[in-house]
Image 1 (cartoon, rainbow, N blue to C red):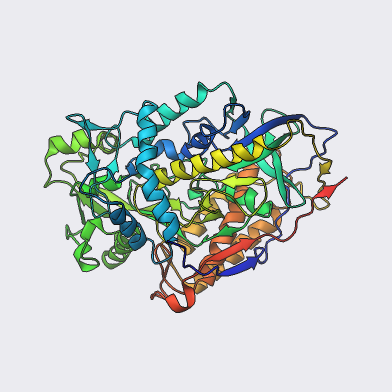
Image 2: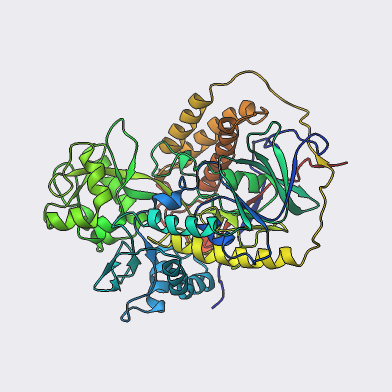
Length: 555
């Protein structure tokens, strides 16, 4: 199969935002230099799978801005989708993925990933991952949008935690791989259209210059754009933003997936309620105890996430109530507590019994479908730069990700990017030198800023104006406000992660809002109330962004 999606429109730059090429000043004569064969930015599943695909003679550094365990991969609950049951077929998984993707998936990519899935799961088992079993066989669950039971999970509803435990252990056993925790990647180093490494702050002042033969971005998503999100605090779109500043092409940025069921307790952090709870038979009811999904889709609670999220928002508007409820009262209580220990424990914290009480839920930002454009092997549009996982737009998800295809994507593309980046690095000369690249900002602002207040303001406006439902006037207002913040935040030269994260969030927020305004139709997770229909004739194509030429200076 081959992709039949037109290339679409390429938008040069983000209109109205003066995004600097580099966030910090640097000069090779005044900073520490480190050299490595492969630099992997991001310590989630995609990054560590890439690291474990490298050749035995390849030296690598894995950089993560927090602890290895602090990634979206570690918090993933549902599982990994893979054809495993003899009664299931690859064609079924492909069809389900295409159906969920809003007619924008690349069929060749979907077919490749689905057929590679069992092999990647077998690798995890060999590496010591303890998936849930019954009578010596893997337990298979079913989630929204899947026609068969094919979700492989661990610890009930804590698959990511167990998978990451095994993969972290294997990575640490490799003597050729250095792991840098608490290290912030500020920007990619580029010259003449090629990626040469990155600027990294790791208890050094100024940040060090890490030169690499090949670089792989695996930084995850950008759910922290929104006030309501399932993502950990580290998901600030750093990889999207630094790739954009380096000239890499970004695609499908309007497609942010909102998970339909996030535990909603006023004043508390938002907790994801795994898709598998609905897969096990939970009902969605409104404040009047009315099971409403039949009003919106024949698949009821097992409809794809975009459908369920939009249905919940509509029902909340109908009832003028801030949430809906998950009801598990009709299910066996012992089964609920056994299969979903994490969900049960989260409910107990707020005095709720998951098996008998109505559980308040509402949608929250969950997964960025769009990102850095890559081919089937993880190549970006910049020479020497690769990417894998949620930071990418690979063509697998189309306009809406099918449940439990995300960990799978990280495994497949992490392995492919790691293998090929390793081969490219091995073919390059053993000795390589730093280049005389430096940056000095001619325009800088030094007034103090309340970064937390600005970040909260950005998250609130994105939730209100660029959320589950969108409209032209709201998107235009969002862009104006983002531009206002950007005019005095982006010119700042910060020396801390809090400032760099805010600059990255503003850059990505602008791209999301601008893409959402440009796509005048509804497709997948992108719901325009002023353009409620899907328009295949005009819009079955991609929207891409590419920054204007930067201000890199070669001495």
